[in-house]
Length: 483
Image (cartoon, rainbow, N blue to C red; front, top):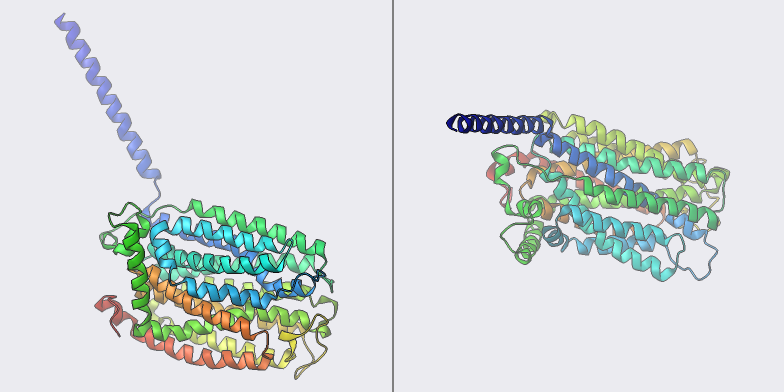
């Protein structure tokens, strides 16, 4: 009996040791195959960029051709304007940035981006069968959604970066985002090649495809994974980012929302943000120009012949190529911070000044406000397709210079309070874009170019001022004191 008990005990002990060994092997396997915190963050940045690429393949293509499509509508019951729609979008966008940090703080960045993506898809779908009331109503809702989307994007970018990777990650995200300009406009170029009029069938085919593409990008947000803290420094994440990452915070959602709103207001009146607001204002003006006005100008120049409509798509492609090359290159350059951000911004303003000069000489002054028949006027040279497309590339390259460096410096200065910082950034950019879309209905090309030259010059100087003292600001701690 004792022997049987001894054998039973030995068997039980042996089985227990085997189970423990099996669990140990399983733990080792999971540990070996588990994605490291740094790799998981990089994965999140790539998914974020790819999701935005799909969404904005649809939206930016829509914005690029909207005014041209509207002027070709035969439906006399439709009296909308693409410029007015964009002015509404960016006007509501700017106002909504005051509350977007509160929304992101309560809902979280992932769900915020998903719901916003649904509204983007609805706006694009309106063009399948447009009515004036639905067109402008959708413009209001997408303005609200855009504020939440970009605040959540900025927060997601920041919590998946640190001071050593924020420049690289900004470049990766920007390059992936701007691939949207390439793919959507490539389709427009081939679909509308040789056409002088956009039929109802052409319009519906394009916008059904764009709506589906937007929805694909929207659902990709669910692939973003919660980042882990990889070192002791990351354990000291502020209550803002902690509450956005971890919805189980003991702080109530209402309190977090109010705190986020207060921080946004307080942040706006700091010297750093006021200076960067001039640079941001310039990005809003040139965003309006290259995303809505310049394509319309090209499509209105009758001297380009039967290719004038397809050239809108080709222009968007080369804007995208400039954005992609700039974002990718400056993302690599930012791995080495010896030269700082100023040389990249200087390159951006010089490239834009060259583009504005060539556009002034190549495109007729009345092109932005030309009627359905277009314009046969000429500027200071016979309109050249090659020069027009070169300017598209330069506009994209210069825009990538400014935006990658603004994303980088905001993530660097406000790594512990990212949502309010990016909300203020988008508030200024969107309100200036709204103003630009409004005056695009009335101002000749030369005056639009002059406004961008002046604001761009002062915006560059103000960026230099902040960049020179950025390291000292962070060393003292980002407590919203003046530099």
